[in-house]
Length: 458
Image (cartoon, rainbow, N blue to C red; front, side, top):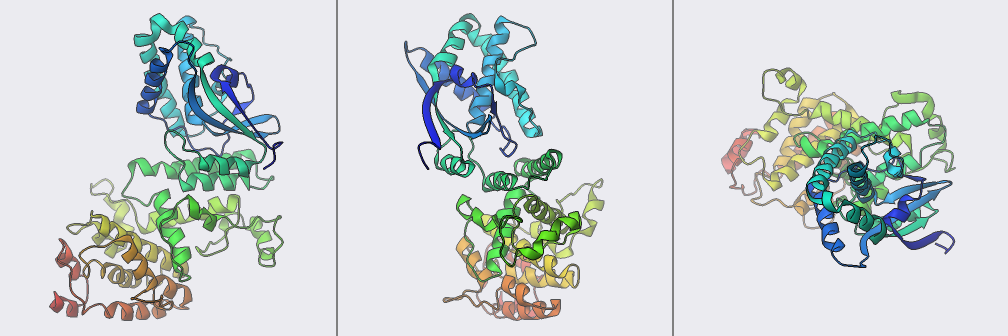
């Protein structure tokens, strides 16, 4: 990184907002600050404004200079909130509807989550300044514009901008690994992808990410990528997976058609002609850009069909009719909510998704029973289940090196026919029937789903 590629300076909020070309790029995550974050910022400003001739350093803003545009890589939560605050203060002095003094007021937000938070936070800010700041509104406005400041870092290279962002301890909610993947693959998207199509990918992605907040019963974007796709891609080759964090996102960074001229990439160049009819495989090479979004959303849809959200009322019971029968037991036994049981449940779901991805509906119910017994043998064998135990079971590690032909994920990968996989997995599970039984709550209910000979070992 040369000195010509990066500049750093201290600017007040007023000086920063004089940059008329500030924008929040489409690849950014939604505006997620809630009222509690806004209240804390307002209280900080109140406290700091009491000191005369005092400069209040709010934090760092990272900008990527893209031709004439200054894209906000880090700082959009604070800058959006300050825009709302200054706008509310101005409205106390001037009730005119027109206000072109803040560049982010022209920003188009496509995420419903962003729009909802902006509306909620502005109502809170407007009420707060009306009740507490009205008499001193000029002083607060002057303090924010001329005494609140940021360290402004401008970079010309987008990858370096994100590397720098990743090293910062930004206030508020940190980016999730899937946020970084969204940004990366939007940047890698081919130039011939029109803006409407890009926006559609962002909308689908943000809609999937919103499940994190209110639909915990379903497979969410976080669990799909971190607990299912990432693990399947690792375990099916006999490799350890571990925890999926920002340090592992390279697993989902691949090749760019038109940029990489490797021999294995050449047959992929005609994929666009297939449009959305292309059939994915979980272990396929990752193709950067729009194909990554197609790949991820394809498996989110597949997971919804395999593991529909549990509904108990009459109005939605019809929706659950297609659910694989053994899957209904996952949330039906005492103690299913424990953390160890959730680890086992994720293991089962990942293995079943891997099977369905390869063999489809052929022998699916029988395979589901075999996978259930293989995964839940952990629950009836061990009193405590930790993440490392899941890792060892997935790789069939028994005190030594992985047995690469016996872990369920590896077995699916190397099996040619469904029957081969089912028979080999059943033999692996059979070896566990003589081990001591766990005494935790719910085991008696689970044991009824195993062969009869397992019962005598209770």
